[in-house]
Length: 248
Image (cartoon, rainbow, N blue to C red; front, side, top):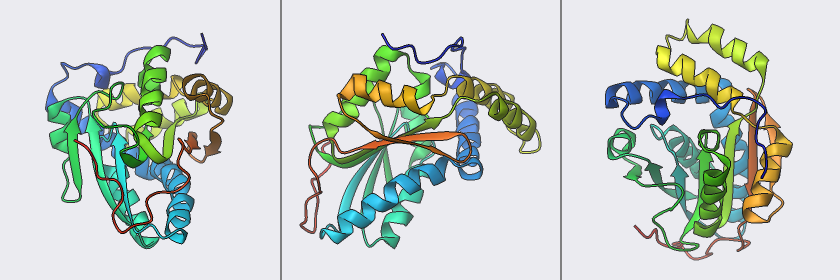
C-alpha cells in the first residue's frame, strides 16, 4: 500500500460527527477565510479557468458542478463567478457529510445535499466537473482511493482535487496568524493537523494513479497548496445549450 505521510495522522475536531453544529459552522467559516487568504480558492480557480475557456471555445455554455466537501460553499461560489467571466453558466451542487453541514452550505446559487464522498449519489458521468478541496487529507488510503474512484466515475469533463502541501513552515505560520484572525481554538488545532496530513506532489500523483490508473496533472501553488486535475474520459462537455442534468 502507498504510504501517504511519514507522520502520525492525528485527530481533527471536524472529523467528529458529534461536534456541535454551531462549532462545526464556526470552524467551516475559518476554513473559508483561510481558503481566501492563503491560496486555497486561488489554486482551484487556476485549475478551472483554463478548462472553462476550453469548454467555451468548444461551444459549451452551461456546465454542472459537484463540489465534494463543500464546507460553506465558498469554492463553488467563486467558481461560479469565474465561469461567468468565461461565458459559462455553472449549475452547482455541494456535498457535505451531514444534513446540518449541508444546510449551512445552502446559497441562492448552490444546492447542498448530504452524502458520502465514498459512494456519491449520482449516476455515471452525470456531472461535468467535480471539485474537491481539503477533503483528501481527512481520509485514510483506502477511503481516499474510494473517493477518487467515485469522482472519476461521476465526472464527465474534469476532476479537480486540491489539498495542502505538508510543511513545518506552514504549520508555524498558520499557528501564528490564527490568533490575529481570531480562529476558533478547534480551527487552530485542525489547521495544524491538516497541514501535517498534507501531500507532496509525488504523493498526490501516486495516489491518483493507484486509484484511477491515470496520470493526473499535479502542481504546487502559493500558500502551500497542491492540485491535481485530470479528464475522466470524455474530452469535452455537451456542446448543446444544456449539459447533462444532475441526477439526485
